[in-house]
Image (cartoon, rainbow, N blue to C red; front, top):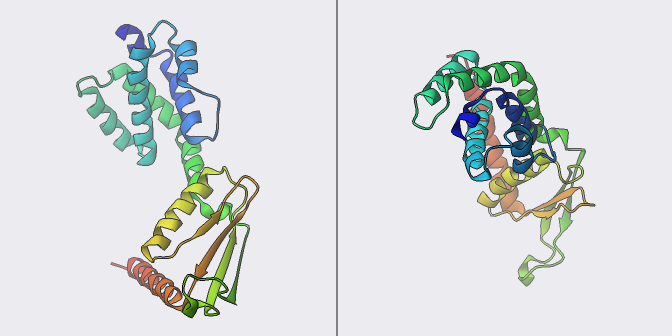
Length: 215
């Protein structure tokens, strides 16, 4: 069956299916659907590693946002690998990327842009009413609420995970009310944590200023 996998005719359709699955939002595309529609005579155990290889190649190209020179060098390297791809398959992949690069790039930008899901931001200073330590009761804290839209948007989940990692590095515990009906991220800061955040923001500002200076 290897000869059928090396054929180029169904490969363009396979790449379209993988692009839809990986870059353009939720879809009903499954491994079995792709196999039955495009490679019906290939057993699942042979199709699965071939699919994984093509998925990796497509994601590698997209994540690097390769220009055409980079693409050519990358695909040439793949043709020289053992169990890599054929020259004909490389040509199909190259043609597909040249036709779909702009659309895939726009989808990746939209998925990673957290501000597209941010609908509002509010903050206030409040007194802490509950704590495991009595000395912390009534201590002023800053409360920030971010309205980030409905859940299920990959960009919002990615942003939240990245933002939470940053908060955890500051020993800040975010409470995430990200349920199907919820739209708010609530953060609580005491004076020490506010100063830590301000210090981090100052470091970011300095880094940006340094990068913006002419060489």
